[in-house]
Length: 202
Figure (tube, one colour):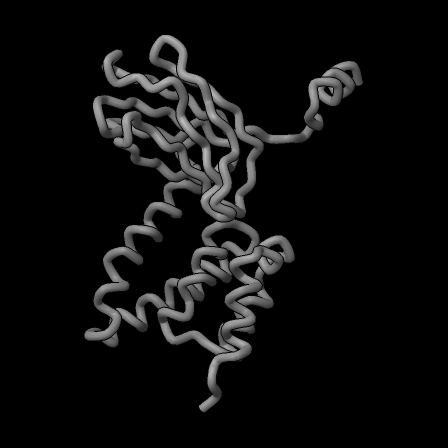
């Protein structure tokens, strides 16, 4: 009871899960004053995280339905690392103008299959126009991810990519209806629904 009250006094609820971001710059000459945390879904800045003595730490309220990113670098040399804030600890080792290590804990992190899906799409999308087998593979992948992850970012990402596999019209809407209310309410999903509603019927 006392711990719950203390948590509420500090500004977050007793059951609020946090994702911990920890970073270390190996070369002091490349240390910026801060790194920037973005919500990739809304394209909004969440926080400017100060870097002190070459290190930083920041706790993010977990949200398994979105992708966020940390933007590193200085003097116009910027790059980013994306992650899903699902209660993990994410550790970065940065050297010069690149990330030399990015470690997610625990090993069951949703970030691992999310990275696998991103790699699959990066490889598959350029081949869709010339390889019907790839279209079928992407179709099956999207349907499976939506069935298995209707309330997290894997299902959300699959829903966004489903039209690339020719899942349009009523087929896409059937997939949409499997998703959680939180996913269905996302602005990008609503925009796609409006586009599909206006899509020419055969």
